[in-house]
Structures are given as C-alpha cells and as structure tokens.
Image 1: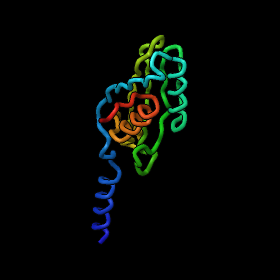
Image 2: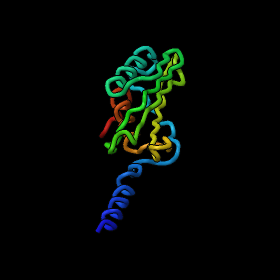
Image 3: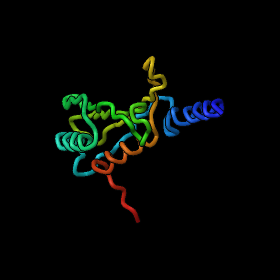
Length: 148
C-alpha cells in the first residue's frame, strides 16, 4: 500500500511540479507595437503612457527614458502557475527611436525553477504571459485597425 502511495506521489509531482504547458524553452523574440496616431511621433507622451501602463500591473526594475529602455522586476506565479514561487516572468520594452517614434518593441522572459535545492532556473518564455503583456500594451498604446 505504501508503494502505491509513493508511486502516486511521484507521478503527481512529475505532472504538477513541471513547467506549465505554456512554457517554451527558448528565447522569446521581440514583438512590435505600432503606436496609435495620438502617440506616434510624440516620444514624451508615448513614454509616459508606456510607463503608466506597465506600472499598473508590474513593478519596474530599470527605467531609462533617455535610451527608451524599461524592464520589469520578476513577477512570480505568471500564467496561474502553482506553486507561484516556482515560475516567474518579466518584460522588456525598448524604443529604438526616441526622437520620432512610430513603434516600440516588447519581449517577455520566463523562468521555471527546476531544482529548488540547487536553485536551477530554466530560461524561456511563456506564451500566455507573452500574449497578456502584448495585449495590455497594444491595447493602450497601439493602433486600432478599422473593421469593415
């Protein structure tokens, strides 16, 4: 009977202790957000709206308006991962052009804690987190494509 419980516990950990299905073991690419007409060519306003949008949900770790670079701190428990301390994500925003911007780039990064004892984090990105970040930024700053 003890052996059955041991096998069940190991099987549960294999299923429950692994990275979420939305985790991809590779570096995420940059996604482009084209600024809406009100923000296009207006870096000061676009930058402020970007910072305000990010700060609503995430803690900002690095912020450099002069270079157009913003990175958030790690947010634990992204994509509803349980337990939350085993899975984290952050985002980076980069304005390539700060004098006359038409767009900016955003990239997400996720890590899964594979080994608690040795503190081994596995790098990658999370498709759900990436979608949520992109939707939040594009929804507030991006262009709206007219529908017919």
